[in-house]
Length: 370
Image 1 (cartoon, rainbow, N blue to C red):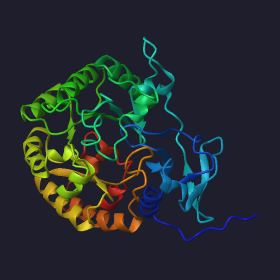
Image 2: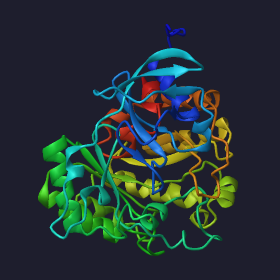
Image 3: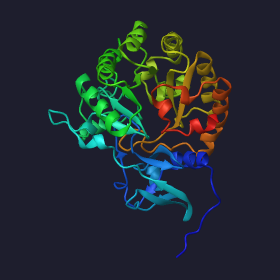
Image 4: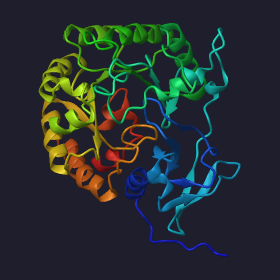
């Protein structure tokens, strides 16, 4: 039986639709690395589309009803991507990196310490616990930081020595080009900056690898200089949502650090790290309108902050597992004008030294900058 072929999609359009709808696989546990739970990207699989490796939801309720389907890949990791029974192209599932096969001297598998995101970004949650996650009254409703720990797929606290060991192996064996250090919030003072300083310092002593540190804004702005001195090349402080009403409803604990407090923190951090080297993560689809996301993005860009807007993915086992993912049309309403804004401000993902914006695997935003 011949396969019908649909009208060709641009790679930008295809990635935007895949990340909104997800992908239904004949066997979601085959064909390369995938992630369930954890700090994110969660319930995704790495997929190479038109030469770009992106993270596509596969373990979500949305993915189970996706118009996109794919059969198990051939021995080279390649398969046909179908949309409602019609071929739209070939995709590939990257093989697991070589460093996943190693373990530390004390027997911890490297993949429990750090994971490959996208094509060449190493990422880890240094502390897999969070003071907000333990209490439903303060927890972020989309967060799955505790799931991978409970399932035994990671360890609670990665030591600086473990991180340095894995980072060196990932660079030498798999050509990793940057690393993301994020953390659950351990306290309301430095909010994780101290443990990130220790981690970055150890990694930079072992291997010359660009690093992004990610935490909530610490109370004392001196931590920005300390993070920079420890080896962090860029900084991520994630708003998650664009309006205070949505933040208070979806992340009541984190929302106590208001948007205006974040804006003050960005203004303090940009002079330390440089224009474009401070980023914030915004989840589109939590309740903010496109105009609200763009209005906030305009303010961020004026400060020299790169707003990395990604489609919200409802993760299984969280309070928002049944929340609808944003439609491709919604994402285009945000990403098209945002891409123009970034281009006009000469604030581009390719100039970010390390982090989610440079990796770009969780959003098609970078394609709209061109």
